[in-house]
Image (tube, rainbow, N blue to C red):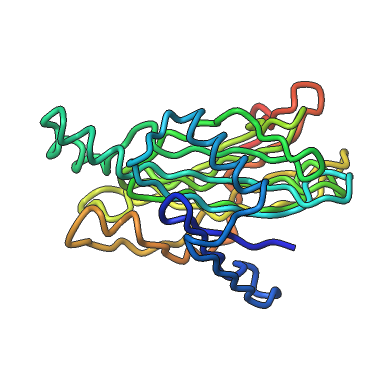
Length: 260
């Protein structure tokens, strides 16, 4: 089962519907006066401690739930967005215009992993990106047919990138990274985009990451901030431009020299 939970302020939880089309929406609401269970309390304490969040700082979290190992328990990937911190730091250093121009790029997005069986949380994994764009987490079978891995989409100015992760020793391990689009919304610049698919490998049990040339129309935005809220649909031209292969020894994806 997979669904996400959004925390707007410390102590207020709102669950939202699943992103998968084949899962019916599940909505759960908890008021600020309702007593939270121990897992939520541990999560809040862990996040605030690791990220040095004080009592008055606002932040947002999303919880993505899926079974990521074979212990018959539901694990969590928790994303944390510190937009409020980014805005306050820019104001305090008189760098508002500079930071606005880059979408408040910096160390303001993080992920944590929680093992569903032990209820223990991983250290913070920073995802340098625009603070205006919250991370997008998706699950899929990539390095295994029994354990799901996950991807994280991040945005930096006019680009969107996708990082691929597996869980090793209860810590998210990045195994690959690809570009989804580049120069989107940048008038006069060459727009590049791609469509990514997981395909069966001819010589290993691990999925290959196939990257196809994308078809995406350029768009002009009134504000650069609008780019971070945009989720354009990209179609594939059918032309493969890269193919990644998994190396189980290094736990990284690689490309074969001279293949493309």
